[in-house]
Image (cartoon, rainbow, N blue to C red; front, side, top):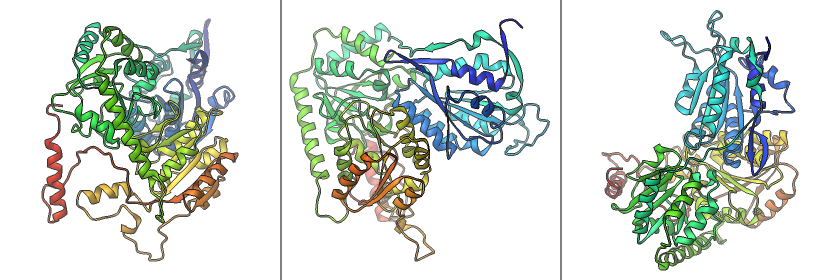
Length: 618
């Protein structure tokens, strides 16, 4: 047939993906930079056949675990500020389900990720097949339906022609600032093998651009009116600022209007630490400076943030009558918490709001006050990060040494556990967009996988420093081997504090004695069992360079050694499980309403005091 090309559905899918492009800083690049894949039942015969044929154009990287390779794709997307995408593919059943956690992480963090999993036969003739989970009364359900809850776009291809309409919709979703998140495509294996006469036009080269929706003029005018009436305004910069490329515009707006800027966890790194308008990280793992300003603010301009509880202190951080203006590409996020919604792209909306503001500026004393608070905060950091004669260093001290040794273009990658609070507070950002703290989903296991993805995204432009605890290392560490195998170097700092120390902190703070969090508090049947793993030896067994570090001075020397190495290097250092930098806001968590423990009763009373401070009607 004229104007068509006959391909299997799998071959057509791969050819289409190879012809999608994006533009980054004026350079045309493939939209899909590569594939993380583990081949098995459901994707090894048809999809792998198609990918093998284009491996020089669309490289496939072998993962060690389906969850971690999809997390690596999320880390890659974050490093690329959502302008370039990786694919993760798995087999049927357990391989697919392993990617659900990564999909949830990408969904919570609004990150583009294309997930492709094998599926059972649409004709059902061989049912039940290997790895199939049968649902009585609903035979069309497979494990891939689990992705519906954690993806922005979901489809199952039951006829080869369906990809003609499905794939453009999946890409448009992943690149839409309002809907951005993971897309999932299920590929039944009998559909993958079918040949179809695809129109040649389907495979024409397409260059995608990120849309920048403009905000409603009326909303902008009202936002300007509210802001012009403010006495103590505050800007909260979220991850959307970075993804929109609005850092410079927001900094200029804040400086011109005399408004201090505080950052969410996802927004940290949009400004450098010592930028004149920067007043620190806000919220539960935030700074005393930012949290003090939040409590004083009468108008809060939230830009590109979904205002999660770690930002708002479970809505205890602000005055009851404080007015919120929320600039966000997503209507859902913009309309939260009684805010005036300004629905639009961060960069365009900040520029349009500035045009509405005339020559208004806040009282100069307001920014002076913020700078004084931030100076006090910086001094507090110095006090907690300074070396002492204590036999075991704190997280804060380790973070400081790593921060000082890291180059201006090196990236910090971290996620769950005790590290997030210490790097959110104590990492002094030297260069914009060199900080990745995944705390939208608080996903243990993100760190090493995302470090691998970050190293891919920034190859030749700095080295990722991955900081994690011993608990997270034990949960998912195989991408040390992945990075060695593929030649993507990262420097890994393992802070060994004997278990899940920060959740132990919360447990004890809320009245329950240490239980099942630190290794020393676990049920141990073997009295000779070691309470510390030799992480250096373990990393060496996967081909990495590694050292067990004795103290802070040794850590500095070891980092210098690691920077000169030609491959991933792992440094393990024993750290204090009980010492943390202050600055936290309140957090609402469940505490037993009745208990025989006096400590729990005290914690419950304190929790009720926290809830009494929450803003009403949010």
